Image 1 (cartoon, rainbow, N blue to C red):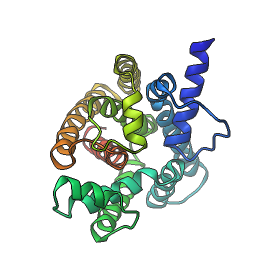
Image 2: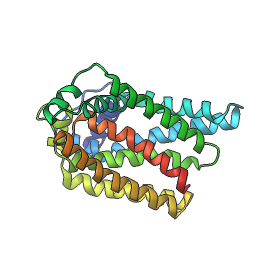
Image 3: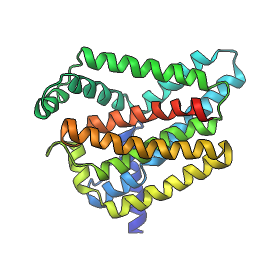
Image 4: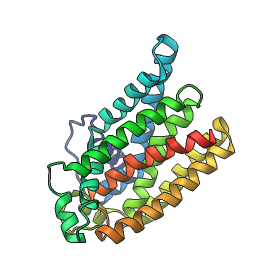
Length: 258
């Protein structure tokens, strides 16, 4: 019963902190619940992917609108389900990195709630990129593959949260990272990875499954090194930028392997 309560609390925390889905319940934010939250974070991605793919299927089947408009609506749905959280992190990351300052100054810029020119440019590129890539994919790519992207992104996000050190001592992301039990998260993400890869293998073929595995593994390691070099670790904004960028990267991968 205690494990079930922790799992439920972790799942509710995952929706509370990583989506805009309202959770009207007060939950302890301690080590067991935070560990369960990251263990179950892919559930958030699965739900988001399923809703987005179902909407794409309905619009294709029941309307005559073209793939570009469907892609715009699908991307907007994903952003609405995250409450723009990851886009905000991406913009802050763009402002901080392209300031070409030292690590401490970059972290200070990242904490500024205002968006600068570089952040706006990164945001425009990411938004336009997602819509264009989705528009190219929608007419021919399996909806299973499209739905798997947010799930795979959250698997990588959980792994990165365990593997990377916090760039700051304060902040919600730093607190979460101090509470994570990596010995629980790593096996959980291994299990989630097997589920996603098996699903892709069955419905989309071995090329797509292997491409997803390779891209998530390589990009996560490379991004961690990039964060260490330029920021001294990760922050909530950098983790949000990872989630947003990984989705775009995986959809781009589907252009070549699906």
